[in-house]
Image (cartoon, rainbow over all chains, first blue to last red; front, side):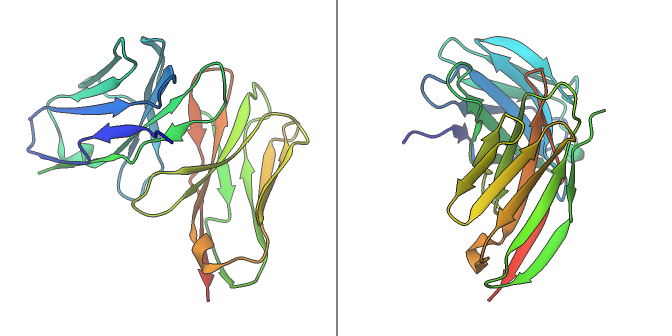
Length: 113
Length: 111
């Protein structure tokens, strides 16, 4: 069965650079969530989208922005990267109508040096 | 700030032992409670989604119960196996499109 796809899987950036993470939800899923998990930390909700509109916002820094496109894939744009942004970034997708379950992608490991 | 608490933080059991752990969450504005199994360096695997007070769900040797009035859910593992070793996360979903995760219970099953 198709799963949530994230790219890239690993990314190394320097401080003050920008990064773009991509999430491709399961086909026919219209809701995407982004989470950040720092080393040894609980996952933190960043932002979610439903039908290409932002539906909720969590602890997403102002340096980050995200959007959901017409094909329902989502991109998380991160600017002025800081060392503390090094983390695993997960996205999850859900069908707003069919299921309560979220399905997680494999994550993107971002390392800021 | 919404608190979702899991206990214990970690658990070490012998193969064959049965075990259980707890997820506590706010009893108001409840929408759903999710349980995930999270192995290191992998993405979380959904175990159960529970929505109704009194729900009981089972998947193989793992089962879960839900009490929305008092705000807790139990996860049970019967006859633990080494492959059950993982972090078990619960996530509370209230009446908004946001999930609040607990800090997880790290289970280590020794052969």
